[in-house]
Image 1 (cartoon, rainbow, N blue to C red):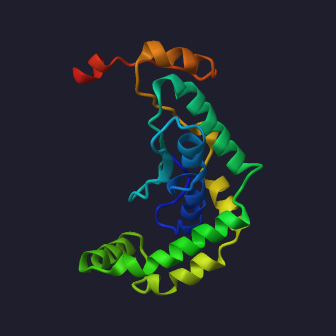
Image 2: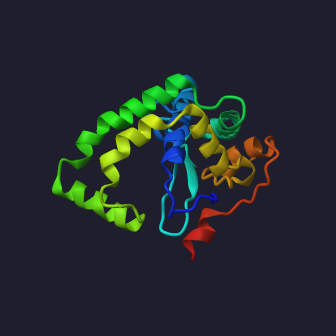
Length: 190
């Protein structure tokens, strides 16, 4: 869980996370998928719920790379929040892409209705989207970094690993994480 309030505007945190985890070109996906070839796709994102804003990372990886993938994810998040924040190039690419997508977000009646429902759910004015491009463009890399740092605390992450315990457990033990094994049969019986 993050400390974010779902009744406030989360735009800076959401944009920052596009750089870290929710875009195809995000650091998480580019590392695990494109550089290391351990996953077909990996990413992270905020769940903007009515009363909470959890952050989850999903990274289906090769079983023999589970521990190394968790370690790489930990490193990516920590560096993003400390020494390797959003670059100006990443900010520009993300903002430009988001602004260019705006026209296509309202092509159908269903899309317009969804936007209206989200405005109501998130206590936004009806004309929220009229000025969204300017809000995107006004964001600085420093603001995005600050939003990510306020939202994410990797020391509070709970790692849920699904896989063959005989193959995965030794990899996790080497990371020094506390490990609790839950047998699939125990879950199926519930």
